[in-house]
Amino acid sequence: MIVDKKPVTSDPPPYTSESGGAGPSTSTTTRTSPPEIAHCNLLCVERSNEKVNGSYVVDPSIAIPEQFLQPLREDEIADDGRRANLRLLSTDGRIDADVWLLDRSSEPDSKHPTPNRLVFQSTHGAVDIRLHDLGYKAPCNITVGSTYGATTVQLPRDYVGKVNIHYKHGSVAPLSPRVAMLSDVNGERKCFVGDLHSIGEDGWTGSSIDITSQHGKIKVTFAGDPAETKNTSSSGGVWSWLSGSRPPAPSSASSTPTTAGTSVR
Image: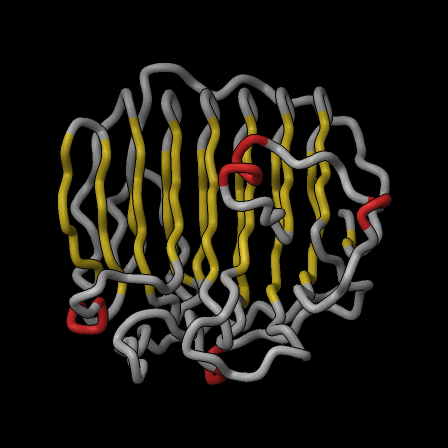
């Protein structure tokens, strides 16, 4: 399978919306086309000692009968029973995925669209997520993290929203000039990508991403950023980050069966 990963050089546009709150997280000008694979929704892939990898095209408009779904998790129960549109989990394995999130075909433009949700977590393995498209009709809440492994996230070039970084044993290098840092207290850094005026008096209700690595390294890039050169400081929108006191545990290198809605490498 060949995926178009042509670099995009434009910076994220200022976020705008009529209400000054929730709104699109991306625009149509910097999207890459998803691969021609089966779409998925409310998909949970969980491994103990194996890696989770592949390409996922998530379509929130697909209805999945309850009998095919896993029981609700604690975070989903706390979120009024709203399931994650895609959840990739591993205990000792690596998570390595390319993700495209489509808009709901049945939901028209709305001032208060239902947020989408993506979750990627490993305990001892590294997490490497490339988000190519997050749609534009609804905000997206994303959780990415590893306890002992490195965490790497690539955001769409025109991502607009909150970026929260949680670290325990590490330090944070200077951020890209395009990113506004709101606070950095006790191992938690709160940032915003886009025009701060768009947050509005009622607070931000658009897209957000929470990135965690307690003992590893966190790295965040935008699609189209130049490749990082080893042993040199990062620049041009690449954020080079947190280096922990404990290296990531090795992940098992066993292959993963193909899952509906994915293309597994």
